[in-house]
Image (cartoon, rainbow, N blue to C red):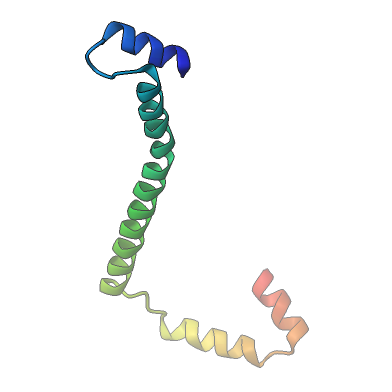
Length: 88
């Protein structure tokens, strides 16, 4: 970073009064990039989740009556048999 700031000030003498200023600015930009990425990801995830919610609410998943009856029958079985019925 120090070499970069020195070289930048040497090539652009009117940009900054000292290499330290260029160093601080470059360092702050590098440090802010991860924060911007995190904010972008957070926003993107929220959009994806809200989009998924909207799609599910428009096309609600409904079970057939036969499936409901099967589930009720399985729930009536003893616990150890119920476990093997659901696993297999």
